[in-house]
Structures are given as C-alpha cells and as structure tokens.
Image (cartoon, rainbow, N blue to C red):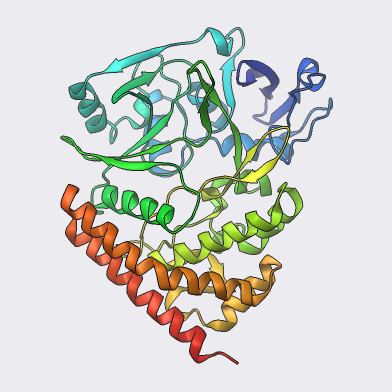
Length: 418
C-alpha cells in the first residue's frame, strides 16, 4: 500500500512525496504550484515539470533533510521506527526542515499546525540534558523537527531573550547545540570560529554561546527571516550534496562524495553571481585550512533559493577539529588533491585555483590576506572570550594551531615564489 506526504513550501502545497509498495519514492509537483507565478523548484535536480520524478531522481534530495549517524539511530529507536525507513522518519520529523519545506501527512495543512511553547530556563536545561537520549526531543508530544547532520541540535524560536519550542510546522529561528562528551570546549570552539570568520569578512549568521547549567552554542538560522509584521518566514535552501545528487552517507570526498572542483562547478552553472560566490568559497576553503577544520564537507555548503536568484548561503558549522586527536586529520574535501594540511604546498593552491576556474594569483591573495590578518584577530577574540566564558585551554590550542599553519602557509608561498 502506498503512502503520501504533502510537501509544503511555506503555506503553499508544492507537491506530493509518495512511497510505493516496494519502498521506492516518487515525487510530483502539484498543478497549482506549477501554474503559480511564485513557483520555484525544490531542488536543482527537481526542475518544475508535470511529470513524476522516480526514486532515483528524488530520494536523495529528501533523505538529505534527515539527521545522520548516532542521532538518526537514537531517534529511530525512540520513535519505534526502523533506522532504514526514510519515509517514516520524514513523516515523523518533516514538519520543520532546513529551507522552506514542511512534509506533512495528508489532511494536515502547514498553516493550521502548532504554536510556540515558552520555555523557562529550568525547562530548557532539562531538555538539553535529555538531548543525548532524545535528539530533537522526539519523545516530546507534537514536535516534528528535522535537521540534517550527525551532531545533536535543537531548533528553537528565540525573541527578546526568551526561548520558545516550536510545535507542529511552526518555524524555528535559532539552533542550539549542546556540549559533546569527549570533545572539551566544543561549544566555545564553534562560537569562537564563527565569530572569527565574521571578523575575517566571511558571511556567517550571528552566533554566540549561552552560559547556564549546560553551556550551549546558539546560531541564528539564515534560512529564516521576519516580515514587516514580525512573522517568521522560511527561506529555501539546498545543500551541495542535495544539489549534486549525493547521499549524506557519501558526503566525504574519500567516500566517493563531492570534492571542491564539483562544488565550484555547481556555482559556475547555477549561481546567479558565480564570480563573487566562488571567491567566497575560496575564502571559506582557506579559512577552514587555517583553523584546522577537517570536517568541511559538501553538506556544510548550501545555496539559498528564490525566484530571483541562487546564491551561496552564509557559512555554518565552522570549528577546529584538528585540536581533537580522536577526529580525522584528513580534509573532508581535498585542497588541490592533497588531503593533509601539513602537506599542502604551493602547487596544491595552484591546482585549487585551476579547479575553481580562477587565476592562481587570486588564490594566493586570499591566502596572504587571511594568513596575515587571522592570527591577530584570533588572539584578540580569544582574549575577550576567555574573559567572558573561560575555555582558555581550548581557545589557546586553536589560536596556536592557526598561528602555526598561517606562518607555514605564508612561508611556503614566499619561498616557492617564481
């Protein structure tokens, strides 16, 4: 027996996702959506057309909306759903996804669902404590929240210093990430790296650390905005794995996933302004290299989508993984075919430029600009954060690592100059 989920873009019904008897997915846009002047494709790989998309064409886009890894396992166990049952997980969690979409059972309308529950600090603390056993609070009645990725996250609505829990298909405004056992200072790590990125000129959403019984990292969602009446609206996005047709299980280049060359090609083909977007992605690549973020994979890149334009989205999930010995020291996406930071030489930067379709001098200029400015900015920022939130050991390690890599990179570029 087939099952169907209605796919809403905001409050408008855009199409229907169906699971056939054998478990295959199919997706079809609604005639009303296709005839609307506001119609936009859900994905680069799902262009507007009346024909049905088969499993091969549509499954990857939708399963990339779901959590991964241990988080997915815990959620499935808590809900009594098979971990491999993508459709049932989408049915359970799809009310609040990344981007503009909500996936709801037939008979439920996006505009008629849910509300916001004010959280007292003690309640928020208890929820954060329970996240390890109940990711995305799946045991909480009437919550249908889904965020991709392997790390535990909690979408919330935050306004005027107060936290609210969104119910049904109501949109969230911010994302909370708790500490991870075994990774000391990871909350301060991400807050620091995101603020450093902003000071270095990279587009990132506002991020901070919330101190309390359990420190959490909080970031404002760039795929949400307020209208003139203060109502929260969704902005559509798709990550690069969705756009390139890769499952979350293949998000790393070493696992057969996309590399930087494919990501630059995607911008060349689909960005409304490919030149500035490619420059931003080069800055992102160099910045991740300097802070020691080896987990910068294709799901950490997205494009915001509207009728008017496709643009590279603000950057997120920036942190130094290199300071944790338990994490891989290999790049998620290689720099000029080189997977290790210590082995990156000038020819690798030249090859990166070739892959991006820009001149080598443009890449060298970005390396020099960030390599010369980031260490000083990092020192000043770390001093401020240590004074306000502690984590001296973690931030000192990040800064020292950044200084070492910057010095080495600048030395290599100068010593190997023609």
